[in-house]
Length: 184
Image (cartoon, rainbow, N blue to C red; front, side, top):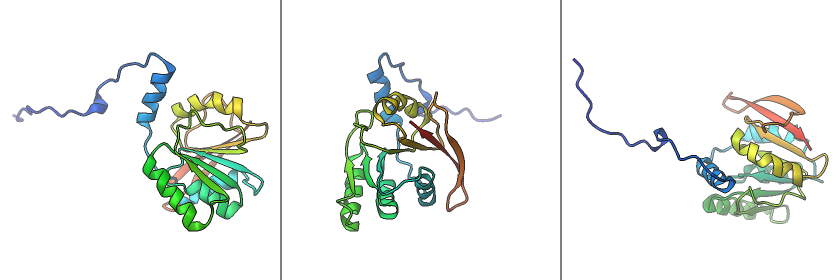
């Protein structure tokens, strides 16, 4: 006979969270669900290539983490770039890298909520966010982005949008990803 386990393991992710009653509460819950998962370098480059980033582009990376996509967009593709990151430490780290690489005239980072960021001057937006988060961003992207702006997402589509291209991508460690390219 197996011994009876008499301890309680308080895993909060097993508990059902209360249902949000408003959009603001839902967005607050989504912010809690977001975590930093860095985009592999090879995938970041493939995202920028798939979006056909040019020196004339203004790129916004929502949830920019350590800043690798905006920095790469400026260094290798000549674009102006803005990273939007809520986490203070990640934002500070990215700003330090921009200073170290001498890119202050091409790259900036904002420590702010990407649900409130003004995206009207963006020609390219990169996302590595969950499908549900992309769904909440969809109306904002549709209302603020100019015609022909490109949105490139990694692994998670924008619900209700039809991708212009769905592209396979592979990282340095031979992990397979999917890129979704949308055009406004």
